[in-house]
View (cartoon, rainbow, N blue to C red):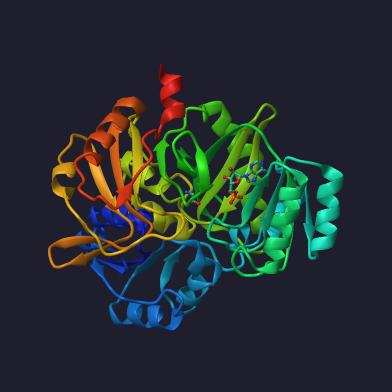
Length: 424
Ligand code: AMP
Ligand code: GLY
């Protein structure tokens, strides 16, 4: 089969690495890709917002299957456009992608089907949202509707902070002006990510992971796309996974099917494990980045038939095998991220780092310049490792990190701390 992967991050490198290893794959393309993906696939400079050029490329190269990595093209309807042109694609339709694209839609769906999530209200005007916050008190959470690249959520410690966030969101000071804001109760507990493959009807649980969203050690500083992750998340015991499947994931997939918009693709539930049980914080309609990297390291089975089965409505009786080992990834980012940072510095030591036992390196914002690898984004490298424990995987990952020569880069030094504290 000829495969086209869309995206250019560490998630897509991990997907390309896994898909290129499939005996079913004859030729793998990735658009636009990065310097690491270029070792697994032929990178093509396509603009992901230009659906016409993606469809034309897929036709010209006789692509049999397109795997979409990021949320933006899914929410813009890339799967609808490819399928309309007769090209099989992995990922939800534009309509179903609203689970991530519209927080209000996701919250209303939860409410209508008794799926546990924080109580909330939707607002179209700042004044009413601010009055609601004043009545509710803090802490409280303010979310802009629509994709906001991680900048759309403010967990406010005070009423004033929440009201400032509401004005900023409607005023366009946090990305594009929000047309709607969701205000919801603050949930306390431990966060975890849970992934499932869906074929419209059947849901196949994949695995759990834990992300590290804040930029600094000890979970301090601003939110990022994710500075590191590990899988499995110890808090997601088999009993907790069963509750998440029964109370959250399956009712959601059933509800979408009944609405006439069956969900096909990977469903990523961002969870808060509270004293009362699991609560949905948000849905994403794709693999997490960097969570995908650790999932792919733990997946023993061929990924490609599973993605095809999800597209074809054939997940029933499907099974995947996972290693019992832990996998962990440390994100190396350009100094300044998630604010402004420099591009263009050469990165050394990649080969020496990859030689550490159990280590796999996935690239994110990198660019090839002849034989050199240049930093070309905020999050630049994922230094991943497996191990019998999270502690062992962590030690191997940092041993590899220390072999990377890149003065303009930094990483957190405490990825995995929660799981390691539990292991002791
Ligand atoms: P989201 O983009 O919805 O995942 O939100 C980003 C982050 O904000 C989450 O990973 C949580 O850390 C935090 N967050 C979102 N909603 C809540 C909530 N209701 N209570 C506490 N923290 C939240
Ligand atoms: N790492 C979180 C996400 O991919 O949304």
